[in-house]
Length: 157
Image (cartoon, rainbow, N blue to C red; front, side, top):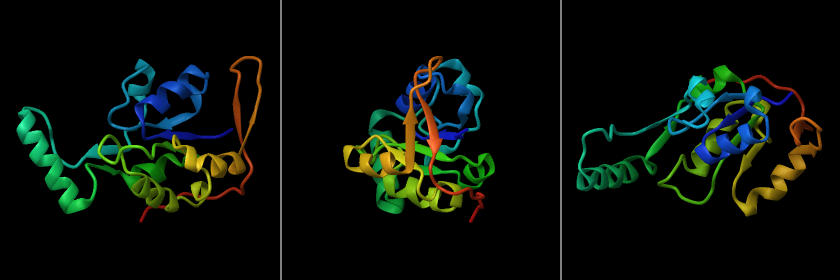
């Protein structure tokens, strides 16, 4: 049974809509729907606290984070390793809207069980996703993910 970590709120919602919520072991800081997602370990965080900032201050903080770190969000690699997912859901569309693909892939490499089992909501990554995981129809939920790669253990940096 695949253990799923989602770094993208829409991917979390899709996993739950497919009946895979019991397999979700971690989510991004922005995942708040369905409400069950709020009970999962949070695997990402913004590089600045946006609370109370004006739109101009948020813009300046985003620009500073991009200049200093190359991204606005970061992955909690220790927590990611602790939850030990087999599958990491992310996106490759907007480097400001969520954890950048390169950061998600770097975090996934710390977990040998995920080294080849990351899935991105980016058409360019679809062949890799399809090659690493097999989808089969299941009457209750409609879809089940099955791993095709070897077992491994997560480790933190």
